Length: 174
Image (cartoon, rainbow, N blue to C red; front, side):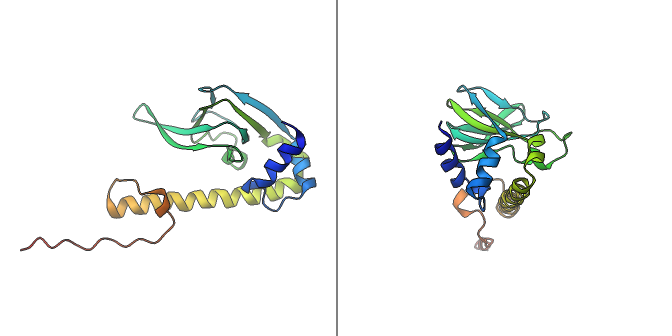
């Protein structure tokens, strides 16, 4: 991909809100391009890692193991990111999920160590990562509340973040 095209894509990525063209160029200079074949695992739940990825093309699946089986959590495509938590967590904390390419995928990879070369950009990036993680925490909290109120069924994604009322008790006719 041409640099101009990559910079236009980065400008659209939520994690780069507030970045100017110069900031994006500084960021891009610290990244490495990576490609993955469909079905290739990018990283595994529990393994050490200090890199985040921005998807340029293709699609990945985020999944976790439960009862010895993979449980798909979501799929991500161009302009989306994964691995952000590894930039803010201690190096000894393992990955919280596994990622595999579900189509041929190209990413930009940023290593934790590279952030020290761009402190101004790193500051804004960390602020945006904090916002992203706060949003994910709110959604996770909504899921827990929903499950406590209504049982184990997973709610429709469109209902997340909205207030819910507990259903009225049924009259048993007694």
